[in-house]
Amino acid sequence: MKSKIYLAPLRGFTTFVFRNVFSRFFRGTDLAVAPFISTVSSRCIKNSLLQDILPENNPEMPVIPQIISKDAEDFIAMAKRMGDLGYDTVNWNLGCPYPQVAKKMRGSGLLPYPDKIDAFLEKVIPAVHPLKISVKTRLGRYDAEEAAALMPLFNRYPLAEIIIHPRTGVQMYEGTPDLDIFEKWMQCSSHPIVYNGDIRSAEDFRRLSERFPRAERWMIGRGLLSNPFLAEEIRTAGGEWPEKRANSFGNPPLAVFRDFHNALFAEYRPVFSGTHHLVERMIGYWHYFADAFAENRKFIKNIRKCRKAEDYLDTVGRFLETEARWKA
Ligand SMILES: Cc1cc2nc3c(=O)[nH]c(=O)nc-3n(C[C@H](O)[C@H](O)[C@H](O)COP(=O)(O)O)c2cc1C
Image 1: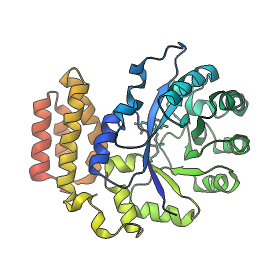
Image 2: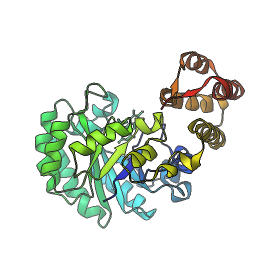
Image 3: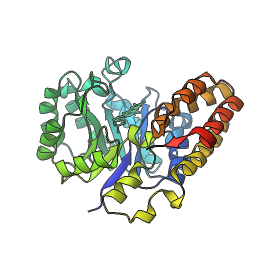
Image 4: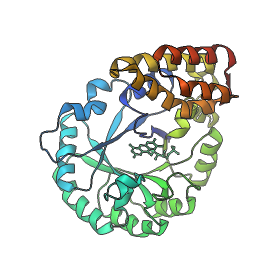
């Protein structure tokens, strides 16, 4: 069966603007989980809170919305609102590692408390039916041993799927994903499992899919931002797509990337009121985009100094037209 590749949620990066432009230029991803939306205590949930997942803003790529919350009632209200928008599945964020989130017992901050997760799911799942719940989790907050309590707990509920990033919360992005515990989880789970973490190349994907031959769902975040052709490359390297379908429309990667970048800039322009925020947002992407280029140090130094849209476009334009060497 064909593998499914998900674009991971990266708050501030994989916004609806990015997802739409990305899917116009690059192929191979099947769907995206949207970055988390926090619940609110008010039962009047404004459309502005849901902007990222409004169906009219998401014509290109199928999306699963994600909620971060520790409060079952607030979650139910938010999930139902998403159901009203036409979604049939909502993802619960149990993985966010950032201390300011986790210390409020949200995201990975809930993982040391399986009783609370249990009580939450017991309340939420029947209340939102027929809407389905999936979870995105890490192995624990402090210790991967926390996973031992989570695996049987999740098995007791009819979850749509479990997305696992096999690190602990306190690890943030340090160290390597713990593939042994992931394997255990796959073996004992009664739900479909999505592997997520550190897939940076078609070779990484090959290694992981050999290790987990039963895995059919894969989520990629930073790897797709650093090399937006990655999903195409994975499908071509695996023989699923013939060579000529790869490298979007047969154009050289650098030319495709340049058009993608310019389209992203143009689509973001009306979203931000001041050009400072627009430029800041675009520079943020270069934290990842830069990985695709050899000899990029001088450019990175220059781009970080840009404050005005014109300077930014000039600097990027010069780099992409003359110095840039695609290495991804
Ligand atoms: C800047 C940033 C923002 C993120 N935002 C979210 C988020 O909103 N929801 C979520 O579930 N995970 C979030 N993540 C985690 C990613 O979805 C993913 O699990 C993680 O980056 C590991 O996958 P990767 O190695 O393929 O990037 C974020 C990660 C980063 C680096």
